[in-house]
Each structure stands twice: as C-alpha cells, then as structure tokens.
Amino acid sequence: MSIAINVENVTKAFGEITVLSDITVAFEKGKVHGLIGRNGSGKTMLMKCICGFVPVTRGTITIDGLRLKKDMDFPKNIGVIIETPGFLPSYNAYRNLKFLADIQGKIGKQEIREAIQKVGLDPDSKKHVGKYSLGMRQRLGLAQAIMEDPDILILDEPMNGLDKDGVAEMRRYLLDLKAAGKTILIASHSAEDIDVLCDTVHEMDKGVLTTIR
Amino acid sequence: MRWLKTVCTIAGLNFRKWKSDCRVWVAFLLVLILIHSTTKQLGDIVAHTGVKASPWIFPFLYMPYYNKLLFFFPLILIFSNAPFVDTNQFYVLYRSGRRKWCVGQALYIIGTSVLYFAFIMLFSVVLNLRNIEFMKEWGKLFTTLAKTNMAQRYGLGFQPELTVLTYFTPASAMWFTFVHSVICGVILGFVIFLFNMKVRGGGTLLASLLLVLSAQAAKWDNLVKFSPVSWSTLNYIHLKPKDGLPAYGYVVAVYAGLVIVLFTLLLLTVRSYNFDREIKNE
Image 1 (cartoon, rainbow over the protein chains, first blue to last red):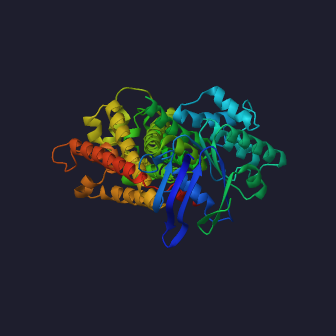
Image 2: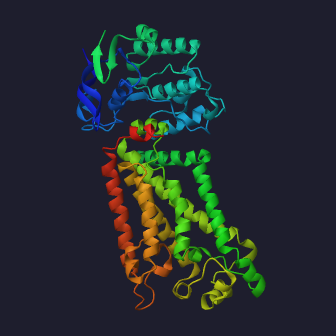
Image 3: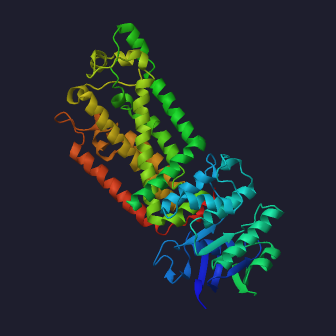
C-alpha cells in the first residue's frame, strides 16, 4: 500500500478552541477518499492544513514522502478547490487560468483550453467570470485544479452550485481521474456523491476524525 | 529567470485586480482633487503676472508637511488591504510557495508606489497645461515665487523653495523627489504588509500613525533626522552649511536600511503566516 497523504497526530487550535483534535489518517495513492461531517466539524480546516494554507499546532503532515513546512511550503503536484472559487471578475475563464498557469509555467495554451473544455465550459467565451453563476465558477475552479495534471486533488465541496446534469458530469469526470490513478480527497455533504465516488470514507465531528469505511 | 517571471506574474495579478477595485479608483481620484486644489491658484498668478510657469511643480507639490499627509494617505488606502489575500490567492499560493508569493507582493508594493508618484508627477503637469510653458530651467515665475510671498498672497498650495532652485536642476530635483517619495511609499507599504500579517488592520493603523508623526516631526528641526517621510521632498535634506538637516548619505543609509530590514522581516513572518485568517475576515 502506497501512501499519498499521511496525517499524524495533527492538532489545530486557535487559542482555547481546538478545531482539529489529534488526527491520524493515511490516504492511499490512486483512491478517492471521502470526508463527511456537519458544517463547522473541521473538514475544510483539515484540507487547508494538508494544503499548507494553515500551519498546524501539533503533529506532522507528509505528502508523497515530503514533510509539510520542513521539506516544502506547499505540497508539490496538487490541485485544490477550497472555499468558493475566487477568480478575477473582469477577465474571462481562459485569461484567469492563464494567469495562474504562468506562475509555474508548466503548461501552455493547449492544456488550459483542454481543462476548460473538460469541465464543460467554453475556452473561447468572452464572458467575464464576474457574470458566471456559482455552478460555472465551481466548474472553472475544477479546471484550475486539474489543468496542470496533478497527482493529488483536494476538493472541498466540488459539487456546490452544480445542477443535476453538472453533478452527474462532475462525478463521471472524477471517476475518470480515479481510473487515471489520481488520489482524490473530497469533502461533501451529499451521501450519494460519497457512495458513488469514494473508496474510503472518514467522518469528522467536532474536530475528531473517524474512519467509517 | 523562471523565478523572476513567477514573482512578476504574482505582482501582475494584483494590478489586474485594480480594474474592479473601487478603493484604487477613489485613491487616484483623491490625488487628482489634491493636485487641483494645491495648484489651482497658479492660473491667477499667471494671469496677473503674464508669465507662465515651468512644468517642474512636482518637487514642491507636497513640501508643506500637511500636504505630505494628504498626498501619502491615498497610497496608504491602496495598501490598506495588505497582504492582499483573497480566495484567488489560494490558487496562487500553492503554485508559487510562500517566499515567491511574498516577494511578488513586495514587488507589487514597489510597482504601486512607482505608478502612484509617476501619476502625481504627470498630472501636476497635465492639470496645469494652460498655465505652463515647457522649458528646461526653473523659469522666472518659480524664482519670483521662491523669493517673494506672492504664493501666500494668492493662496497657492505650494511654495517653491529657493535652496532647491539654487542647488538642483529641474530634472535632478524631479528625479530625487520621485525616488525618495517612491522609497517612502515602499516603506509605508512594507510596514502595512508586515504588521497586517501580525494583527489585522494593525499595519494600516501603524503606517498612518508613522505618517502623521513623521510629518509632524519635520516641524521641529532636531527631529527631522527621525522623519523618513519628510525626506521625500528636498527641503528637508542638508544642502546649505549649518542648516541642521540630515546629510544625503544619512538619508540613503536609513532608507536602504529600512527597506532591507522590513523586507527581511516580511520573508521571516510569511513563513508561519496563517493565510486562512484573511479569508475568514473577508
């Protein structure tokens, strides 16, 4: 069994309030791992800690054998959707992704266009992202997460704002990514999403993580 | 080269947000109003004397300490949301890493300061085109204004300084005032960036306080040495013998020292900075 993300005794506290309590979990490579739990249970915080956005109070997070903070600032080779996807409202989808792609310079025009097409948006559309619906922004969020073909995807509520067809498309697409050997950590409120997509399921409650499948 | 391109892309992303950021529009509009209200009496003086002014208004525009306050505050307004974190920055961050991200933000502060003072320089000319005659020298009108109380009588918002007219050519006065102002802007921007990472809004408050105290300090000769904001204009730098003002070498050393120390502190602070805090408070 090869481990993609290893979380060991992670605690995150803000003063007196503990939002993650001594969490230990290993996410296997090439599988889809589900995180469920009520609002405010700590799912998003755990994801933010794994992504390196929030430093942990105690414990270690290792991704592909490299320790966060010690060996790297942020995990290499990951794609992320956290919070409501934020883009520059006065630019179209392609320009928004181009700005982000230019940071690493790993991909070109073609890959960006493909990523936008894969999530069902039009790469030639001149429509500004500010005029997008929540569902369209969510799709564009997924496009930015996948465009550099990362090995690990961290997706916080990726189905938010999507209509029925959009959800079905997204599920199909995530299953394709799984078949391609990607490791996906997904947080969702939808039991159906978790059933259909996930190989392992973990429940978060008041900062405590329990593996339920 | 790749590193530089990444850093420039990060800084560029912030500039692209200006289009939809009304704070920036308000700041630049305020500057236009300030330039207009500071120089509007120039038209009366030109009409009365029949002599047009030279275009070198910029070095004198915010020489009075209260003008400094007014001209620097819109820049503080632009930097007030440092460290410029929004939901879009999550996507930037995990691609760039903390250090490059921090350097990108610092570059944005430098670029903004350059643009801001270039804007003031340009519009001090554009808004007064009717009263200006292009020439290489300071011109007769500025010399007269520096030697008499005519500026005061007409209520002109700035007063050309005779020492500056004597010791500097117009081009060098423009250049030094521009560079010093940009450095002051960068220092204030770095202070806001650094202390906003520690306490949300703390940096903006501290920079505003520094600006007020620094400008006030210029009123007392013995405190000018501790007032980097004052040195943004040439009237607070040692030119004449025994004027008691800080020497140019001292000014350069303090400016360089402040920029280096603040930049180093930024790099150290960003290592443990909790980016989530800014989003939560958005």
